[in-house]
Image (cartoon, rainbow, N blue to C red; front, side, top):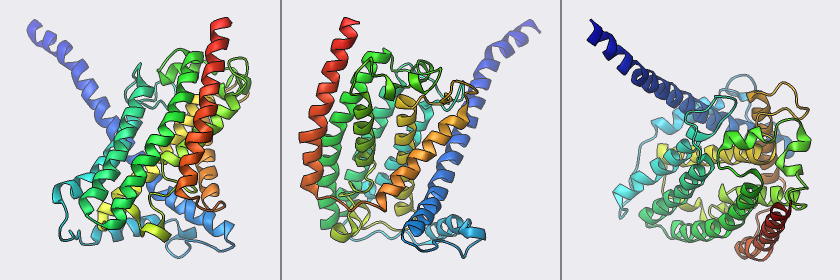
Length: 341
């Protein structure tokens, strides 16, 4: 009897950990799926509003069932494999893009204790997973053996290299101020009101608001959003890396793009805008993080339907000639102020 009780004491923590892991995976899958579906609906509605038209309205009230209809259409289409492709890489690429986007959510805290797996190096883990997303786009384009996809793959790599540098320089300056890579601790340091948010910590660096703008612009570029969607550029490259994809292959790429947009907006909210802290220092909670998150996503959508697509050389020059020098100056100023004070 004693040995049986000891066995239960030893195994129950393991069982609870497994159960928690399963619940977290189901919640993340549901969150990613719902966001991918209804952010498309929101973007189409916003696009209609900006262009003085209605947008989706036929399937369900206000078109709310349109994402469900689109999902059924994609899932019921035949998975067609073009001739001459690399079959293994062709099928692996969409799953790689979606899996890496999913993994980023594992370490993102949405509130006190509301995280699948809290890591001391959580911020580093997110950047590690996000960098693999580019590899998925590159493999999909390479495996397609399509000239438009090949041009897109070259643009994807060039754009990613150019915009990861200023983004990481901004993160390095933030780490000098916060002293941690733990996302929960970064949010905790911004408690007390919007005057404590990193975007307004001018005592750490007078260029902090500029650093916030640099990070936001880099997020647009890293998620291939207009005006930096040169890797897709329908008018030039048909659909870029996705040209030869249909059915749920295209659907996974599409879901991965919107999932990455949610990851980027969540990171901005956590690193610069206080995370789940209230702007007035009262009643903190996940609802504040979601409010900031979807406000940023709406801004990203507004930018898409307001600004024209830039040229590819303009995109690279913006990073190498403008963003990187400013980010380096911000890093030097932050380091000097931290050293002195």
